[in-house]
Amino acid sequence: MFAILGAPSAGGTIPVDATPRSTWHHDKKGLTVALAPRPRPADPVRTAQPDHRRRPRNRRAAVLAAAFDAFAHHGYHDTSMADIARAVHITPAALYRHFRNKQHLLGQCVLAGLDEALIRLDAAARSPHADDAVITALVEIALTRRGLPRLWQLESRHLGRRDRAAVLLRATRITGHLRRAIRARRPELSGAQVECLSWCALSVAVSPAYHRVELPSPVAARVLRAALWAVVATDLPEPSGGAARTPHSGGAEQAGPRRERILAEATRLFTRHGFPEVSIHDIGAAAGVTGPAVYHYFDSKAELLDIIVRSHDESIVRLVDGSTGGDRPPEVALDALTREFVRFGAEDPDLLAITVSESRHLPGAAERRYRTIRQHAIARWARTLIAARPELAPPVARMLVRALTTVVIEAVRNPRLTRRGDLVEFLVAVGLSIQRTPATRHRVTAPVT
Image (cartoon, rainbow, N blue to C red; front, side, top):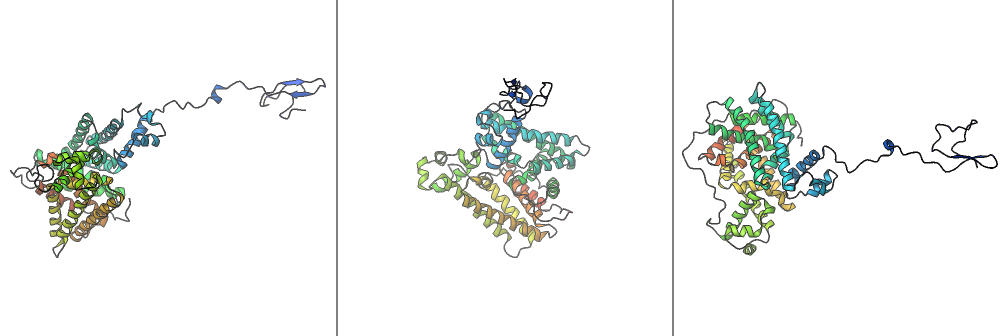
């Protein structure tokens, strides 16, 4: 039978395009047939298979990017090495070629993010108009890397001592840029005043990390820059010689029923170490009771957190209702609302902060309840601000209120500020300045997430 793939030409040669190669043979009848194809010699270029064992050069950077997003969105305890490995399509064992453990990986994420921010701020500080360039760069970093503040402010408590010190050093360098920008605008201020304003300005810049950004990015950047300069321009109260305020929350020696002591210590421990890191035994020991005794008052650690956050919610509702109710003018209501919120934070900083750091550990229904109450409180505060300043668009007013609350939540737990004897008056002045931020000259359209 004649070969189907082709026959030799009259000269007995084989066409050069005959594929696959065949061995031709003349049988006894003179017919030309093709035997089984002879394998083509292996072409190492064409037949080489990809080497899946070869690691890509940018694998470490890819792992850091995936880990950064996971830690920022889900928190340290709710993120596993397996989650990160799946995100970059490798095995968990491959992660350990680059990072000793999850704690080491978190530290590298935070430090890499802060180093990137410092490179941009260092470049801005070398520009001709350094003060304005630094503020602009800081706002751009805060809006484009919104997860970074959550990592360095909330998740850094899970780092080892050396990485925590490195994070603090970099955060201090960031505020150093702010201090120089403030000094250029306010040379009459003392060093202590400049430092306090720098931390408040940083809180304004990072405030978008903790809420949904409703404004288009260019408008949000203009609002934040104006709010930062409003902080810098704050007419500060005269320094007082009084002693620093001492918060009343926490402490096993605190007077009061045992149930209240347990709640106070649970609030303090959850805020300091994180909900997953604290055990019922830890809470009982801090409150001066045995661990099992806690169950006489609370069914579980989750119930403790729910009750604590519910107490915060009720306090905020009372505060807003009491400050904005009645026929008082909106300017008076704003002053009262700002002052009461600052006083609440100064007296119970852990209760104020726990909703920011631990609300993700609430059961679904409880977390939705907290978010609804928080959104209603912000909206009501913003309506009061708009009543005093009708030129403000609602999303702008809400952004300013959120910036103010972020300043207070962070300031009342910052040792550099809490040593001030006039902390409440200082923060009230800063808060009112934020609410007097000039309105953006650009029209604000529909909210953008």
